[in-house]
Length: 249
Image (tube, rainbow, N blue to C red):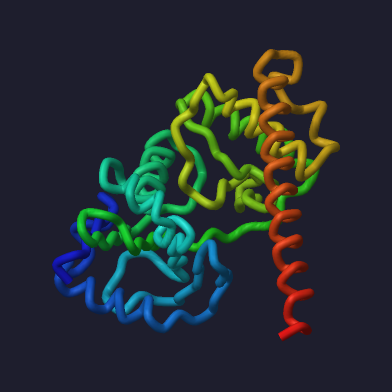
């Protein structure tokens, strides 16, 4: 257990058991996920109705592990000099809460380091309830992104599936964990280009369309798609060559 670090959100620090009691129960919970929402090479996300100790608030709770970040050597090396993926997501979600932005409230963050590198991390946060975003809420999504950019943050994955309509008719941002805004990379415009990609009809509502940032973001988007297509082509070519070689064995 000594390799693990457990962070508790300020709103729950005086309402939860001591960390040495919570940590074993949480690790046992993570070993037996149920109500799985996503399970692939990039991440494991599952839902629990109640945590294995007394907890403020009502469930269910979302437990998320970023497998791709935890297992990728480059990200592990970077974690020697910076926080791991889930700790950054945790702190960003707390910051968004301070800004008054609607987003799932984080409860816990766990991080395991080996030789100083993050090799496993988890984020536990409230499950968000709401309805899928429709055309009537598109302008609210754009306004929320602009608010995020003014705070010096970028979303990075702002497609409409990452937003819900809350009980008051506003929008709730899912997938907490925005990153600092890098102005030289036109990150703010790139958020809007990604939003346009998932719903082309939203284009008239998007700002920055007449700026240099939009042109940079369009070029960046084309470069990313080109790189992905190249990787798919190389992967298919490699698999194809492997398939031809099998019959000769």
